[in-house]
Length: 144
Image (cartoon, rainbow, N blue to C red; front, side, top):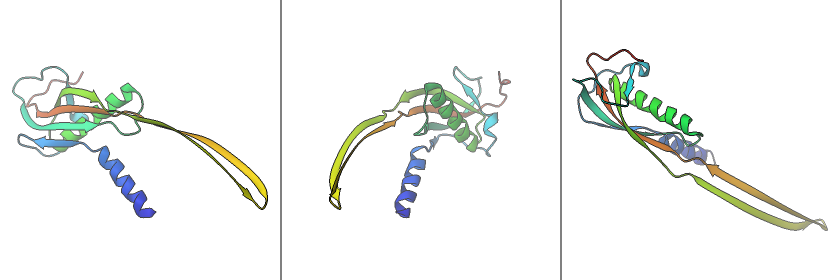
């Protein structure tokens, strides 16, 4: 049972992981707070470091919370590569799972009958996936 729980935890954490594809020269890691996200064209003269992809967590509810989660994860992943900027490409929505189960049972114990019933509901929110490009900007403008 312990091994099954441990495996489930590992798979859950892996599902939340971000990934990158190195396309340039990484630099020493920096603080994610120093990474600026550019929704429009960044300042000229930037260098591409990597392509980034991430997803919101499996238990993140609400569109704004999902967006905040993926932007934070893009910043963290870029900071690991020494990028001080992320050129935001876009997002896409995943598919959530919902199910309803109904159960009933009955029997007897020491001559006494019993019955029971139950309804279970499982709702898993859909994930939001985000894509960006980790960049290094030599003289970044001040954060707004």
